[in-house]
Amino acid sequence: MPEDPLLVITGPTASGKTAVSIRVALELGGEIISADSVQVYRHLNIGSAKPTREEMMGVPHHLIDIIDPDEKFSVADYRTVAEKAINEVRRRGRVPIVCGGTIFYIRALVGGYAFPEHGFDPGVRERLRQKYSLLGVERLRQDLQAVDPEAARRIHPNDIRRAIRALEVYEITGRRISDSWGKADVLRVPAVMVAMDVEREELYSRIEERVERMLSAGLVEETRRILEMGYPANSGALHSVGYAEVIAYLKGECTLEEARRLIVRNTKHLAKRQLTWLRNDDRIVWVYAGKHSQLEAVVREISSIYRRHAELGGRR
Image 1 (tube, rainbow, N blue to C red):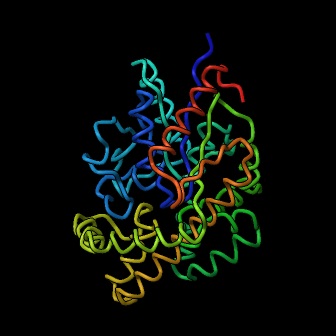
Image 2: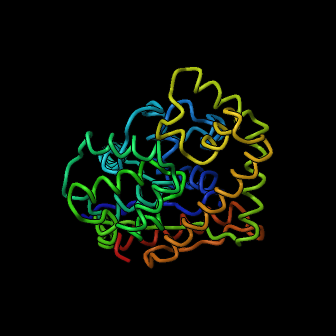
Image 3: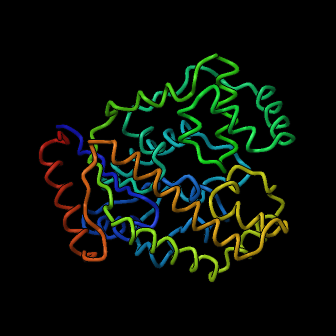
């Protein structure tokens, strides 16, 4: 008997994935496997919009709070731990529901993401880090654009770690890391992929409201506390949107109002990139989740889509 397909609930940031996925899990008897590259880190709670225990409504969540902010965690690491969690959920007779907006995580899990066939060279990486700590981020972006324009386009300007990694790959192998990204088209496992569809204007409004809530909830204090715990400001986790801008404020490089404006701007840019990636994936079923929808209706539609595909053995 074929295995039931994996359910993936994705969408741009602030599109309502978390609330929907929890209620779908209650409807289907499922457990949630996070696909969020910031929620994997301990202590980064407010800025990553981690669901609280109350918001989880008793639904088990996996791959949240599994590493410290200064630990390395690659896409390959994610795939390994996610597959283990999915298998454990299935052994319990439950439905694994992958929820999140980190596209590389989702592609690694269901899309046959092709990992570059080469190792790491800590010496090359450290030399590149030192080089760009002196020359600056703009020079880093220029150099990446020169050797791998696609990587330069898709890697966020704040994501120094991944930009350096792309340059490291090129220097070691002479190949562009982005060449491996284009091999993510073949499904590794049967999957039903659903994305939240929200009007752009409303999505941006939600982002602005979310940033205000995060700051009111203590994002600055949380960031300061993480730094006081001894985690360096250049940790990969703290380069994520929200924390990077607050750190700039704490260093006196900008005002709090400027940090707020930058968080809003960079989050909107993130949402735009997520939408671009998702719109280019014809495997995805879009479910309207905008202001004219009701949560219960969205949950029913996704549950119905999943059940229909499960009855077909996961074939689309």
